[in-house]
Image (tube, rainbow, N blue to C red; front, side, top):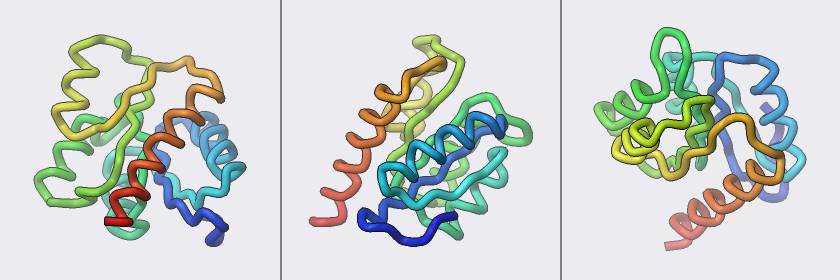
Length: 135
């Protein structure tokens, strides 16, 4: 986890692939975000409580608790209601997109993706997150 930066945006990266997490964290830290990582859904729930991110990047296919399960558990626990979630997954099925949105995700990006696509999606979520805080 990095120290507070100028933007101070807090982003939780949840993916069971350490290489993907490293790439995402590097990209996020380059734009001034403070990051935290989780390798599975159960760890994500713990980090949501401890880190209190503005945005979460969430993989679907993970051990112990998948991304859909994380979203459902967040709802059950009234946890992270203001966390804007980007589903980032190899699954690119319309039903998965619909299910993610129905469970509370704000955006969905299929792998493989470009760094530019990822940065634009994160920027959009961060802008929306910041405008919520300014209310």
